[in-house]
Image (tube, rainbow, N blue to C red; front, side, top):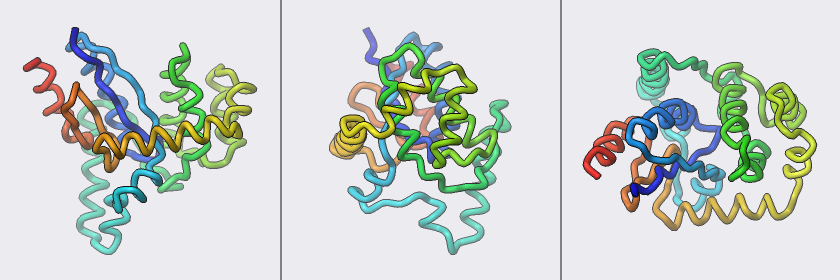
Length: 200
């Protein structure tokens, strides 16, 4: 049986949002499962001496203009709703703790969809816990349990541990996908991921 696609993500990444919108159909076409692995990008960046391309090229207007254009083009050609967040880059530590709590639960994907859409479709300020909880309630998710998880020491530590484990596996940013031992970074590597799945 083909191993599942492992998807490393942080809600703060517009590229991770776009990959998230494409991956379920890609996985279904190839008859493989899709597993979600939340990581905190700030931990990954610190450990790998990396930063987002918008920060790395902040003084290069041509480069940042192209990066923005590429995001919108990718979304437009696939019929994905997308708007650059007015709060970019968003602080997602609370949302990512919620994602860790959601892992393995029946409503995990619903939570992921809701938070990604809140940031990259509706432009909501998700680093505000009250806004995050409004999103949770509007999507009929277990608000009380999620709110408690945001301050849970074990959940905080688990997010840190998962982020550090991702770095040890070679991750330096998101979105990162794994198909068996093969790693694919960035939304523009999805075509190569599909080729790998076709080959195996």
